Length: 312
Ligand code: ASP
Image (cartoon, rainbow, N blue to C red; front, side):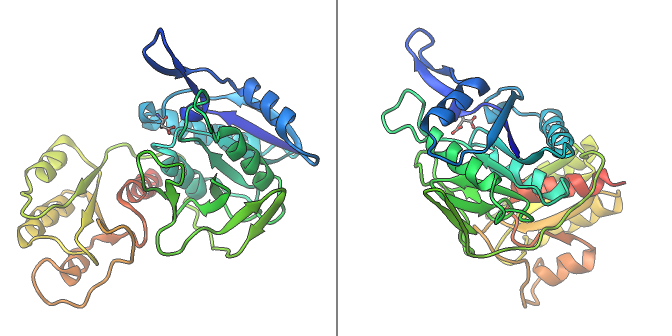
């Protein structure tokens, strides 16, 4: 059995460099391989390695992300590969994880990990996270769970997990539902399982824009996006799915132009639903024909809409 490691960049692969005046890429895929082989106890599966990029995750484009998705899907067709681990920058890790979860079919685990500390920092947690990720990818327990994020010995579902703190090593959390399980030394413990939801799209529609509502915001940027040729708009609305009354007209005009509008919440989590009768509440958005992205944050709802529109 082989676990295939794809090194895509991020802090996990970086160390401080005096001359550059900051952190630079310093660990390549083969370095990761050397470190896990030298630090693992017994039972480490065979690991093969390649690099994709590598890039800071804030430098990813939609094409780069889709190319990574295609590579993962191709590798998983190899019958000797039982699972994939990706090392990844933490900034957009949850988006890559969600895209892989949503679009790569099959039971083989896809596990993403990263680090918040540099490889040159005391207490660098990258190799511990990577080893835990390899153990999860190789485990029978993780099969059928789709893409997972393993950090800090916790196993999170791609759909639920989000980066909650800009500096803490405990940054990845699944608000409301919590992690699916934990890695306890060499043991992989799954406490809860969830159903996957696959959109078998052949591409992503790139012209999908994300708006976050704030009190009193006007609709100028929304209208501008439609004039620019947006095919989809995602709105992080208030609470259970509410917009200011003056947004309804702009949303209606966007829909009339063939733009798909998806609503999610600007809250940390929760479904889209309410029982109000006032203007701009859930019932108005439902009547207009908006789609709703229950339980997905704005960036993940955007990927979902990009995938849905990519089916056309
Ligand atoms: N700069 C990093 C990135 O590529 C941040 C990290 O990995 O923690 O996202």
